[in-house]
Length: 50
Image 1 (tube, rainbow, N blue to C red):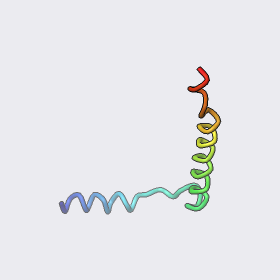
Image 2: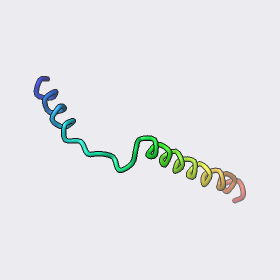
Image 3: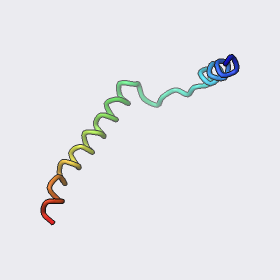
């Protein structure tokens, strides 16, 4: 258990910085999910037409 904690602490010290702030990253991810939702909504009746 002690070795796992030491490994986690070592890994936490060597983290990389995000290219954007967390707010920008969240907004981009949210926008991508909304875009996927709109694509799925556009094809909602394809199965009933065939």
